[in-house]
Image 1 (cartoon, rainbow, N blue to C red):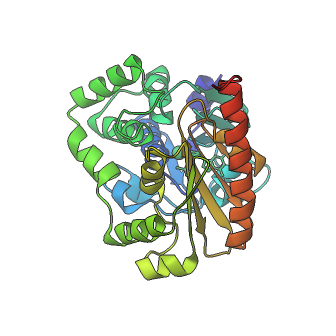
Image 2 (cartoon, helix red, strand yellow):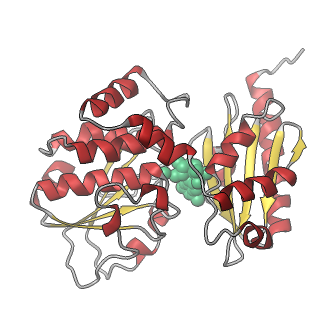
Length: 326
Ligand code: 5GP
Ligand code: MN
């Protein structure tokens, strides 16, 4: 039982996934605050930097890129990680034998890689899973925890408009708002406000978009990113949601060339289509309607392979949804 593992543990390492989103950072900082409240010594680690829009969350400033290898952690808890590789160097850098590992997540593709697994694919977010889990280990709700959890829920549901939003999600959110959290400020800061360089990247991405059989995609090269003034990972989730909302599109895809030459892919769709199926073919994962993966470069070759896989998926999934099209 994970509850006993937490009770016994003194030094706990919480890891969120690479290229962290609002659910990763919100869940990690909520759990961090909860464990600190229980008197645990907590380290928060993420292989990529915390995006600026989440830095105001409690404990977000304490997130390290890698754990402290001198600390003998009793327990590692992965949050919002669909598989072990999503923890990246934050986990790989731990010396052997590695501490016991717990996995708290909501991805349908989760591989149950922990010794303890709390995986709820029907939950809107890992934050919603934690909302129910934290009281089970004796954590009392605080305004700071509520702020972190609400950030996770608001961002992963794109402002309560994904298909996994249930009455329960809204009740959880209402309870968090009752803690005194400013939901409008959270929505604006974590979802809508964007850097000028991001807006420029949208311009480049939209100019280069291509449409074929309902697949709307765009590729963004390193040169494009330099032109937009972006460094490191582009925050492309806003743009990919925008692409998938275009009426002629059933799938929206962005391919971004990373500094190491690899190509990050982010995908969105609507029912009955499924992008997790495509992501898994390339070693990635996610949800039916939102998924991602990383391909080897060069960008043009990655684009060819990914577009072919997406078009095959669109044709097959369209057919299985309606085997006798008029
Ligand atoms: P995004 O496109 O916003 O990066 O990710 C969409 C969803 O897919 C998120 O829930 C994210 O955690 C998951 N995801 C993205 N990339 C990967 C990947 O490479 N592997 C796995 N397992 N999941 C991914
Ligand atoms: Mn995530």
